[in-house]
Structures are given as structure tokens and as C-alpha cells.
Image 1 (cartoon, rainbow, N blue to C red):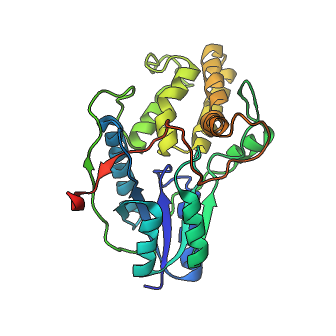
Image 2 (tube, rainbow, N blue to C red):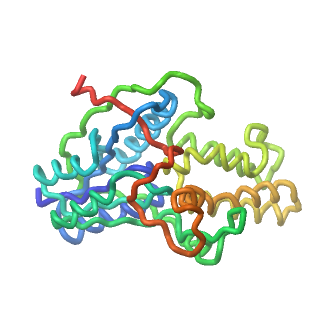
Amino acid sequence: MLGLHIVWFRNDLRVHDHAALRAAVQSADRDGGRVVALYIFEPETDVSAGRQRFLIESLRDLQTALDRRGAQLHLRSGVPVEVFSELHRAHRILSIHGHEAPHLVGPDRQIEAWAMRAGVALRVHQQYGPLPLSSGFFEADSDWEAFMSEPRREASDVARAADIGVGYWPELTGTPGMDADARPGGRRAALALLRTVLGSPSNPGSIDRSDVGTGVEAYHVLKPYLEIGALSVRETWQAAISARQQYMKSGHEIQAAILASFIQCLPGLHLEKHQRSSGNRQGRARPTSYRKTEDSDQMSFGFRDPRQA
């Protein structure tokens, strides 16, 4: 093995419209080495079992999608910089590809410093677009809409995949209790819910929208799937834009208005958390990926490594 190109899945648990996966495959084709799809269970406490289950179901769905494309999902538990350091000593990491976070998370400055010292290329790919401007409510601007209008990336086959030991599925350790949303995790569940949100422009009365209500309510129902990355914001935005246009052409103004309010929420997926962590600073600056935040409203999960039981 000539080295690894790692796809670090964290808030992008899908294979479709996945810039990091495509870039890692291209790096392997161009520079040699093998591709490793990696998820790291980071230490966390006081997280409900329901939210943990949502993540596990999403990862299982991702695992199935990767299997179909010639790759395996590798699992590790621990502090990311320590996981990468161990993998580098054992296999030599050539590059790490990951997506930006919707909010400022983790001790990732340590990863940037480690990658620089180790000579590992660290590539952070956009998935949320330029940080939109805000004037009280979330507003998209031309740069953000241009980013969302770009063609979606087709899922990549991974011809040069590596097997470095797939690792262990951790035991659930979350606190018991009911979560606000008890929906199943995974891309298939996310797509089914998105279809419910969009309805059927050719037959607007054919789908029951009672569980998603208004466009804002629909956004909050879909938000866990968007935060964990079972759906990309781009594919969600494009599907909603297309459905709204069809509703408008057919004269169904209520359905079009519901989707308009849903679309208006999408730029705020990472803007809200960025504003909290930056003291509501105004301006065009994009959030720097991989920084620490005290924001507790994260899709983070607490697990126990079974090897340490």
C-alpha cells in the first residue's frame, strides 16, 4: 500500500453530491495510494440514546451505499488527531478530505497543525456555500444561490479502496428518554421525508403533509438529516426550487408559498450557529471550518468503545 487518501465523514453521511469523496478518489487515481472511508466516534457525554440511534442508522445506510461502490466504512473511536496520528504511523496518510461543518466544532486546529507537521494534505470542501448575509431572517444572496445551482456530483465508485480493518461499532451509552424527533436515521428515510415535504406537483392532494405543516416546520423536521448530511443542502434546494416552480405553473399558490418559506430557511443551516459563536458579527466572511465552539446544539454523540469495556 502506497499510502492513504482518507475521506473523513462527519456531517456528510451520504455518497451523492459528496465533494470530499470524489476528490479523494481523484487523488488516488492521480497520485497512487488507496482510499479509506472513515468515521470517528468522538467522545461525548449526556447524549440521548435516540440521537445515538439516529446516527447509527445513518451510518449503516452510508455503509450500504459504500459497499455498492467498492468501498468499506471504517470506524474508529477517540480524539480525531490521535486517530489520524495512529493511522499515519501504520499506513502513511497522503491526504485527508472532509467537508466544512455547519457550525464551529471540535479541536480541529490541532488537526490542521498536526497535518502541517506530518506533511499530510488536509482538504476542506464546501457543502453549505458562502455564508449568506442576514437581515433579521435568513436571506440567500446571489453567491449562495450560484453555489447551490451548481450541478450535483454523482456518487463515485471507489476502484482503489483500502481495507485497514473496519473497526468496531460502539455500544450505545446515551441517556434514556424520548427525543423531540424520533424519526429513523439514514438517507433513505431522509429522501422519503423530503418527498413528503415537496409533495407532488402533478397531484398536490396526493400526499399527506399534516406532519410537516408550514415551510418553516418542514425545515425543522428535515434539519437533523441536513445537519448529519444524509441529504446535501444543494440537492434539497434544487428539488424544492423545481417543485415550487411546478406548483406556480399549475396555479397551486398555497403549495408554492409553503415551499418558498422552506427554501428561505435553507441558507440559515450554518448561519445561525455561526452568528451565535461569533457574537452576531455581520459581514460576508465565511466561517472557518474546524474551530472550537461552545454551542451545545450539535449533532454530536456519546459512545463507549467496546474494546475498552
